[in-house]
Image 1 (cartoon, rainbow, N blue to C red):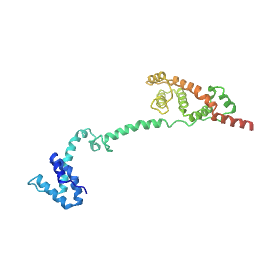
Image 2 (cartoon, one colour):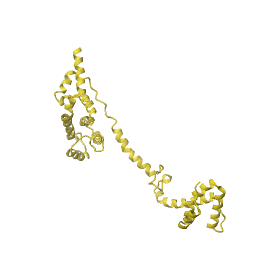
Image 3 (cartoon, one colour):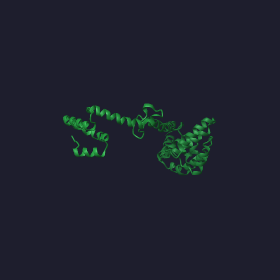
Length: 272
């Protein structure tokens, strides 16, 4: 077991205060005690008699307890301002440490988790798809004639949304559908709530489902969010509609999603 030489002990006692030197040397004395108890006992008793003449030597347990009391007194004085804040026994005098019982860290963690839970809850009500009957061959052929014919039917929107999911741009259809639902609302509180959800899900730059809008439209929306109406997103909805029409719709017409659907309906019609 490692121990300090007399030269090192003399150096520490010379450059440090007596009590500080005792605090520094105590761990080595304990380790040395496990290795050679008689030597440790003699050394500590000899040191005690030299440090405090005329005082009865005390054992290592009493010495350690006295040093703990002295250290604990200084820490208590430093922690008084923290305890006056009304945090009680849960307060930690070193709030910068990783103390899991510190009340300030507990409150901060709760505040950090609250908006995350709210955002997660707001996104769980997205429907997987719209309820719609199976499209007919005539309807599927009409989708190729115009983008409006595709978007006017639930079956067309479901097929187009399935294609957008393969291109990782499903949020465009979800945003358009949310705006259509908002337009049908009449209650003011419901409009404000749904407008806030749409903004957080599709307009906010912090959202993973943010849609692509120009700065002018974003500024208008930000100003109108103070008192939103059911038409607050009309300009943004038109931009996304135009984007899907010009960018995604031509690829959809050449995709396997559309071709397989058209082929299956044609075969059923021939068999019938």
